[in-house]
Image (cartoon, rainbow, N blue to C red; front, side):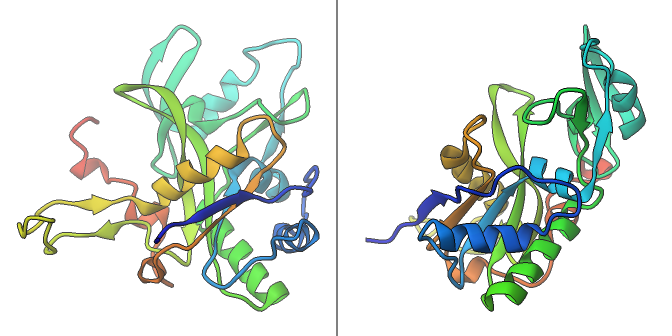
Length: 238
């Protein structure tokens, strides 16, 4: 029966600035008895990428709103304010709460910014895994986002490497033989959401592996910032 396996990589530990994430991931996978394979998709949380890249800022631990000036600084446009909540657009083109700045799972008195270029971050980790283990994987950098018309949050991809960000099914046929006209599937978002099921929000598991993904999904070209983020000219809601 066709299917995929999803499992978390434990034992990575606390991440500091300039830590080699690829080496830590490869070594932790081996130590836990689940070494990486060719064709795996490695999903890495934004938080450890930001920590390793030094995308961290100091905030006042006694002031729960001390990060708001940083939100303003990291935003290229404010779309909506409601109470303490700011919905803004980041320089990456993401529309999200508080410019993606996060106070969870970081030391008190600090906040995590989004990586400067999450696709580049994913490429760096992917290349590092290939150099360390001699295998070819895809890498997704994931983060938790809300959705404008649905309650709750889910993990989505903010960066990717080695995999099609969007699977274009236009021109193929559905189960009834009808040609699909508009169907494009954001497979990296689906994989990020699936991986979050084994990583959780407070379990200390910042990396997961999705194994058994269709090989046709893999690609050396593209990424989230180029292939998923909708340009303002094509966006009906901005």
